[in-house]
Image (tube, rainbow, N blue to C red; front, top):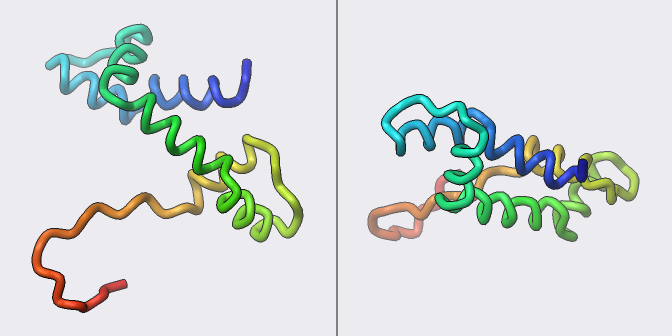
Length: 103
């Protein structure tokens, strides 16, 4: 089975999607078919595609290669590096922009 398909299927059948799918159906959902359908219809597949593209992109390849101190192009290593070391995207902050930047 191709690596991308395996990790996408793991995302669709994983605990986060299972929780959201169960919330949407109002009961616990364990059926793989329902979980995949929910994953696709709720935007999970699109989100996964964006994350996968970033993980395979030049910027992540550079950081990953620097981390391992050699040229990395293996999709599994790039994905694992991206998932373990890249910070999640920041949500927009509400409130006035007073020029103060908090780290």
